[in-house]
Amino acid sequence: MKTLFWKENKLYLLDQRKLPHEITYVICGDHYAVATAISEMVVRGAPAIGVAAAYGIALAALQNQSSPEFLPALQGAGDDLIKTRPTAVNLRWAVKQMLVTAKEYATESKSVITTQLINKAEAIAAEDIKVNRLIGAHGAVLINDGACILTLCNAGALATAGYGTALGVISAAYTNQRKISVFACETRPYLQGARLTTWELSQAGIPVTLIVDNAAGLLFQRKMIDMVLVGADRIVSNGDVANKIGTYPLSILAEEHNVPFYVAAPLSTFDLTLSSREEIPIEERNSYEITHIAGVKITGDEIPVYNPAFDLTPAEKISAIITERGIIYRPDREKITALFAQDGEQDDE
Ligand code: MRU
Image 1: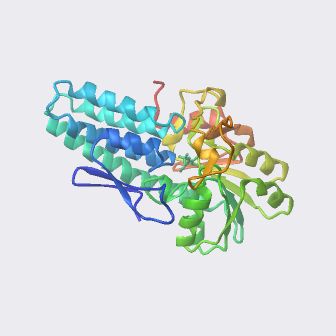
Image 2: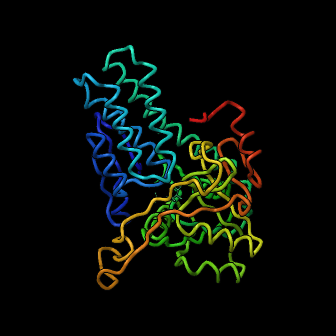
Image 3: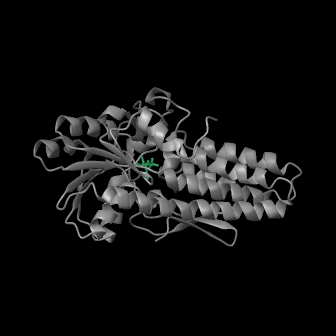
């Protein structure tokens, strides 16, 4: 089952709002449709929304074949797409890759630029899967036979172009014939854990047990957890991590109970322009996600709601970050700078 794919100049997005009960695709014919699909969670997960946005720029190019302001139109589409979800930095990363490609071919015809942009979006999608497999291979060594892993939200194939980050590590370990099992936090309010992670892992035959988010503490006390493994939406230059709301409390529990806390993420999730977690913008989503469950209202009228979608885990709480370039144990500014110094992967823009 593909999270997203490109066919006949349209982007097909697996509608994750309907999973696990219904498998349908939303077809996007322009970048506005992609932006709406990202804001409305048709597609979600930091790498997946980055890839979707890359295709969004390709769609904007197709739409603007007769526009005299072709490059500014692409820039405008990029701004529209970046605005949709402010925390996950992969979105901005992917849009930037696309706009750099457009500029590289700026002296060519619109149709040549457009072909290059479609190719680039396809390359970003393919690279994401390749990178996730590398993350999986590196991270699998951290999982001992028989380990019981706690995860939050969904950092699987559904959150990427394919294979997944944190769930990719779990799949790689499972493929290596290890007897592992997973506890998936349901992940209120959007229930990515309950709806998506349990579905993905069950389909792969990996033993998974669903818990409510509040049960995590008891599981640690009962020594039922050997490691925590989550994804990330943004990692800044000192190693602080933004990820789904509820990640930070798990890091505190892990520290208290001497359990390793691992983050799996591609280099495109790093934002070296920010130096610490306080600078990361936290997306606030609508109150409906909290006041309603599966469309049923559970609160009285007009109850004030605060719905931050992500929280911030300090680097000191993280045992290691698993990337496609290997594992950064006890991440800090120096180690992250060294990781990127290899090839000037990110600039300061
Ligand atoms: O709000 P979501 O579902 O987009 O949040 C997703 C997460 O927090 C994931 O853990 C993160 O994007 C990493 S996905 C590989």
